[in-house]
Length: 44
Image (cartoon, rainbow, N blue to C red; front, side, top):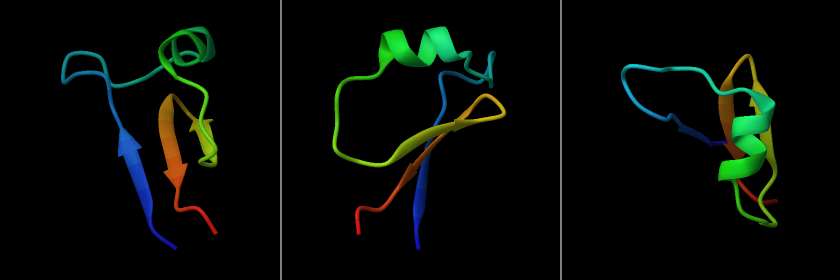
């Protein structure tokens, strides 16, 4: 299983849930927030 990681910038490496919810768009990809890091898994 492959995963992709999306980060905001080099200066700030973690996301809060509120930032993630405001910045993310509605998608069918399984997306999770783990310890401030956005994890997007490959679709089955």
